[in-house]
Image (cartoon, rainbow, N blue to C red):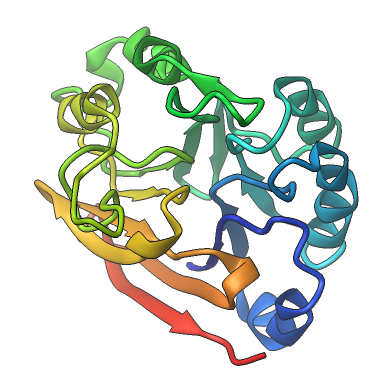
Length: 231
């Protein structure tokens, strides 16, 4: 399966139109949060409409620039995986929305405990259902990146990701994690065998391609590639 990976859209209406061919080739779209422009939460609604008009299989979470109440509109659009589990073609999608508490200037900043609580539904599942409690068929979406990877470094080089989200990855061992939030930290990394991808900000023309397939009874990531559009 091929996924178009997007994050930090911030009401982009330029680059998304350049991705027409990628939308057509994708089996699904993975969105890592931030529909709205910074300080303009009302722009989330037109951004959401723009995205769902491009593909009928979108999986997404809220970002720190999106108001918490906007989750209801994601659920009404049938794209939310935040705090839930969505099953499709042998894969499982689950997500955590919002960003870590930092400046207090964005509407959806949460404690580490709150970020991790969105994955409680996974922890509540009996280990016997997935063999050794491994979720190698799961793709997690988390706006806030996990700590200490190539995907959570600010310009100074300091890692600002969530220790709690890293722990849940280490516990559950998902197939892949899609994140965002730190625009300058676009990259691909691993925690154990789990592929971590921050595609960068769509508002800056950045996106990613994730391809997965099931071989010998086990899901594997066969491509995790970053791309950049020119304005």
